[in-house]
Image (cartoon, rainbow, N blue to C red; front, side):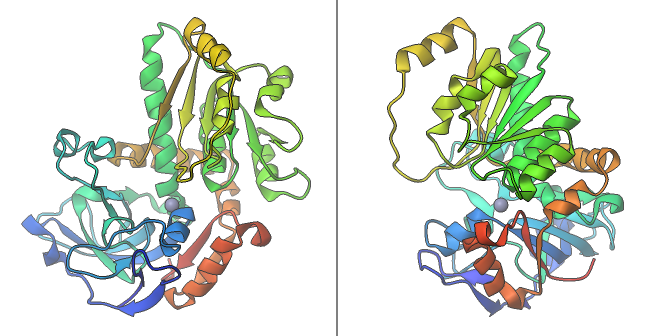
Length: 370
Ligand SMILES: [Zn+2]
C-alpha cells in the first residue's frame, strides 16, 4: 500500500513509499483493528519533521511514515474487539505508553520518559497511509453526524487537555466563575480554542498577527461571537484596557515573548495555559519584579500542557457535536485546503510551507472518500 514517509534528520525527504499493508493480527490479544484511512490533517509538526528538525524512525526502519491527525473507517476487527464494528468511523490517539509510572497507568500524556512513542512523530509509523492497524484501546468512535469535521479531533484534543487541566487546577478555589478569556494565536489550534471556550460560555477575545481586514480566521472568530484583534495594532496587555483582565488565557502562537505579555494580562485567581512548542533560543527582557508580585498577590497560576489522552479525545467528540449543533457549518469552514490522494503530498508541503500565502487554516489529505 502507499504511504508518505520521511528519512528523519534529512531535509525535504518526504516521499511516496510502498509498504506492506498492516494486519489485525499485528496487534496482540485479538484487540487489533484494521482502519481504512479517509483523511489525514497536516500541520506544523509534519512540516518541521520534513524540515529535519525532529522525528525518529521506528526501530528496524530507516524511514518514518508521517501523519498524526487522522480519521478513518473500520475495515476489520480482531476476535476480542466488541466495542467497534466494520464500517464505524474512528480517530486514533497519537502517543503510546512508554515506561514511566504515568505510562503504566494509561496516562502517557504525562510521561516522564525522555523517549516518546508517538505515531507519525517518534518511533512509530503514522497515519499518512492507505491503512493502519491499531489496538481498539487507542481508537475513539466517531458519531456519523460529525464525520465531515472529525479530522479536527486530534488538534482539538490538545486544547481539551489544556482546558481540563485548567479546571482541575482551579478546583483550588471554592468558587471560580470565569467570564473572559483571551486566545493568543488564531491558527487552526487557536480557532478550535476560541470555539471550545465559546461553547463553555466565555466572552472570548482572539489575537493574531494578521490585520483583521480580509482575514478569514478573524471572520471565524466573530462568526461565533468572539472578537479578533491584531497584535500589530494592540498588545495583549493594552487590550485589557478595552476588555478587562482575562480570567483564562490560552497561548498557542509559537512566539514565546508573548507569554510575558499574557502573564501581565491575567485577572486575580486567573489561569494561563501554555501550549506552544518553541524550539528556538529567543530571549527577552521582562519586568520580573512586577510579574512575580502580580502572580503572588493575585494567586495567579500558569502551566504547560502537551499531548492528550483518550478522555481528552472523548471530550473533543462532544465539543465537535455541540459546535455543529450551535454553530452549524462553522467547523467545515476551517477545512480550507483538501488535497486529494497521498500522491499529491508535494502540494500539501507546498501549502504548509506557504500557509500565509495560501490563507490555509487546515490542510489535509483526502486519502479515500468518506
Ligand atoms: Zn498536528
